Amino acid sequence: MASSYALRRKKTKDNSGKGTTYCSGDKVAESGIYDIKHHLHREHHEAVFLKGGVFPACRVCGERIRFQLNHGAPYIAEDPDFGELPN
Ligand SMILES: [Zn+2]
Image (cartoon, rainbow, N blue to C red):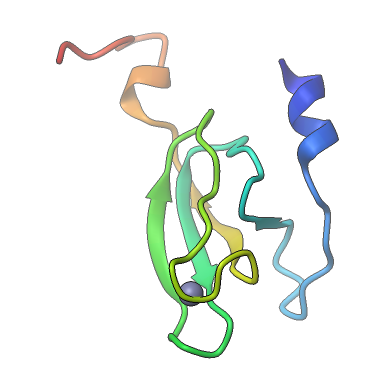
């Protein structure tokens, strides 16, 4: 439900002013491409996350990692005109 997502979401202001920053352990409320910002050991990079998942911790910087939605795009199976894809 939307309300449980809202409770877990941490709305932290980021220097870029681009939007909500998520921490490891937060639920993914929107599918899309996220910017991943590590603590010191690695340049930022991008990855796709699907709604309903959980942002992971990094093997190196653990929970000091941050995630920020770069470009939202629904997974095809979330679209009512396509629905669940066969496995
Ligand atoms: Zn890291």
